[in-house]
Length: 232
Image (cartoon, rainbow, N blue to C red):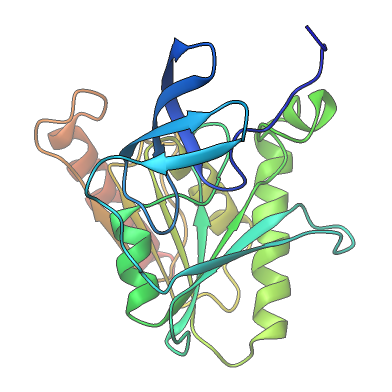
């Protein structure tokens, strides 16, 4: 026991694993080239081998951008081209690590640059960073939006999120939606207050979603749209 953390992969995400011998681990894994697949990891050589047939030469690449003053780390994901605009992906859950996501991969393949900040409150950057709450996360999203707006002007700029990322997106939109072209939320958990932003927004809902009441959410969004139009 060395009491040290020893990384077994250099990229991607391990979802679950099973130790099958003293020198071999069986795991499910994904990165930008591999949708969720079964791999084996030799703990002696630190080499991983994909044993399922879901490997792709996708042409996608990711770059971790950090050390920009007053901005949290973010992953930049690109396809062969990135000339259609920039999408700020507001991750749900605890963090974003480059992995195969069919929607993100499709958008990158269509020519969009995906920027996924690990805003304050995300895992992987220490206890103090993780213990921040929604206001800091919202502030970080807006700060990245403003930075990208200046850096890539006049490119189109979008927000994209799903599930528990939706409250952060809606609060960021209410705080500052300057230079944003549109926002997209799929299966987003309501923030608890009516969306007040006035930019074009697409909400994709699931009729049988067990976390979001479909009919109530439809009526809520219709009412918010009406109020925003009257106050415009």
